[in-house]
Length: 314
Length: 184
Image (cartoon, rainbow over the protein chains, first blue to last red):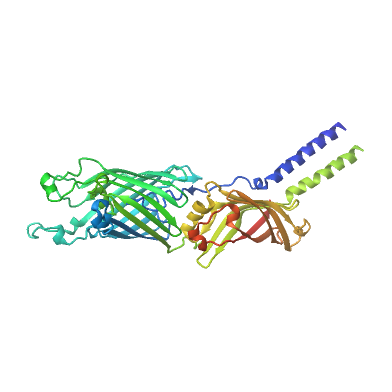
């Protein structure tokens, strides 16, 4: 009889166990095996403002970009505070894979043609792996398209002009982390190599230590800022005579702006002291200053087209 | 006397073991949703849906990882996760409910059975009751193909569609559930 009591006790325990399982049937399937899940949308666009962000265009996606900068605000009423003037860059970027992106662009600034390759070496991970940061490298080339007579006011017999004089290069490392749903920071130090510099005492390789960040204000609006700090002593200031002739010292580039997302477009509206939208131009060729009103209002429009669906093959 | 009592206990215990045998499950269920408007059609597909169905009690559960939905366009997937579903905050959609209209006896012979499904659907952290009809096809090898279609309104689950894109996203989203259950 005692044995039966014990048995009935055991059975009721078993029954209790079975009932508890009813609550979460899914446990019967065991633990889920989560594949690596990479962090997405650290920035809304592949550019913070002028410079590259940690983001790439996705595999198979073509991004048509229109960059536009008005004249400086300190141009005054006669220039309609800069809105009379325009500098533009038209660009096409393409995601060869989710990690590799290529792009070309044509700028009205020095009639420059530029191209770049960007590759994500490390990708920040949300689940299934432990990588805390994204690391990307960008290498770009820019070709100055100004007429030879403008670029090279010397007789060809004395000082021959080579096509390589038009070329400059940019190499950048982008180390970024999306700290939370709304906050992302990145460091993007790099080097700009200019084949032909203006003065004998100027170095061809110019190193900069730079960074950028963003904060989302709502699901579709973010505020971005970026700063490019050219290490001092690399680009000599113009002499008094050169200043009198209209030459300006090179300044560091600072930009701040909003990203506004509307379906397939991202609108970036910003204020910047740089006019150019390719690395040699805005990192080593910015001559205006925020403090004296050398600020340009500008915008980038990004429109993406899916040319190829990498998942469709499956 | 003792023997008779023991037999009674065994008889009581038997249904418990039967419960354990009548459970069906899958990890690779397919859920698709469709938003059709004159502006654009959006389709999301998830092939990693987990579900368990207890045929004896009728209890059924689904867990759907939001990030596992795949789209034709990468940007659709990004917006779906970032702007609408907020999948970092609400990583899973869930359904807990009951299937009625099919008996354990019917499960033993191949055939197509109409069933009713009722339960609580949690999407974007908001739970709403759902009542719909489905079909279960029992195959000769004992597997069960279950299918069910129903509509979900994004606003019912606190998913806001901004005015700018209202014409691109349907008010009623058609959800198609296709499960290939195997006995657990």
